[in-house]
Image 1 (cartoon, rainbow, N blue to C red):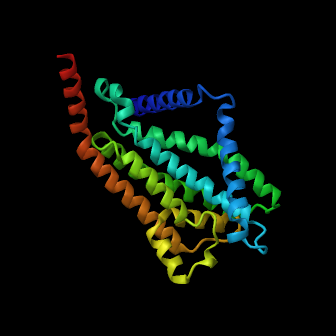
Image 2: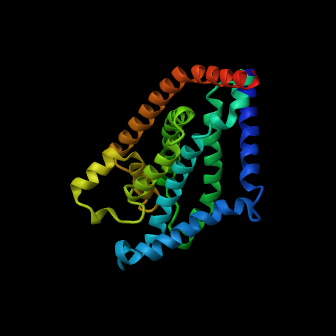
Image 3: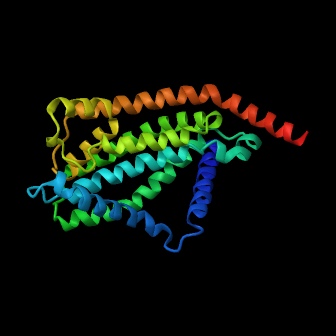
Length: 265
């Protein structure tokens, strides 16, 4: 219990440190966490509204905002994990804390920012006068499963970035393709049934967004098959990420020690 309390304290301090670093040079501070998703939604609606929204789809802005909000959580969290180890060298070397703390902290920081973006999401829902429904509660396990998936992916990215710094640039390209492949700004009925099925199976982020749209916008219970797909991806990513991370982390710390000793010598 004492170890758990200590790890949680460190996570809180690391989150506070990272927030201070990212906001130290900004005037508006955490307001950007609210403004950014709104700006993204407006830009996508203006650019893609006529092309993909159609005159019969008056909820297109909310449709887009649902996608950008969840996409933003996924990409920001996993991208921050790239620096989970390299950005905490001193802690890794000089403390005996659970090594997973540094990845978990990045995911929780992204989730904290996500909670701010939900304010604008709730505001837009209110504008459309969508009545509350019990299906809204399903948004919680939907996001939770995505966080588990992000944690597994984040562990892999953190380890790879130690020896292959170019992964940062490759991952930026990947997330760009991911945006276009997650039906964020276009409607699914524009795709063939076969393509919809492929996207559902291959792209778990698309499935997470689809579940959110069904339970929030349509107020229906998403198909159980969607839940199975997301659960399998979440469990698989977490398992693979944890095994890979645990196998590599001690070697990484040892190499960091060797590098410091060579510099001192």
